[in-house]
Image 1 (cartoon, rainbow, N blue to C red):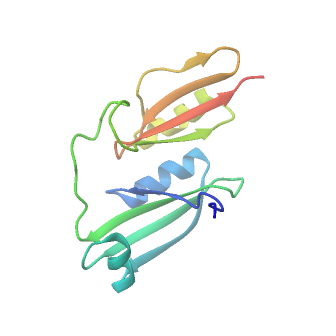
Image 2: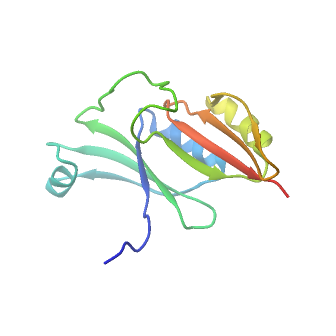
Length: 146
């Protein structure tokens, strides 16, 4: 048996509304919001007393989703500094293809995004950069060149 597709990537956030605004500015669409709780949620995530607000964000092509989660109970746990470097073990980046990388960075700045380094050119193929979101994780941006 093989997988059918990647359904979504989950990101735990401290400020759900700010995260929704950030990803909306990037061009994602809010698919819906819900509260998750109950025995099935506890069993799935391996925690007791889960109550979590989620927002499902969808890419414009409809193929990819981010599930943003704000834990009410138990409280979210911080495992270290929020501005970890890119070579830190574990998952900490999600990458998006964009039409105009400079415009995208400019639109994300008022939402708290900061460039990790700078905008780089990879051969004659792509402009690439990483921005750090207000929550501290890295969002990669790639603009394909003609």
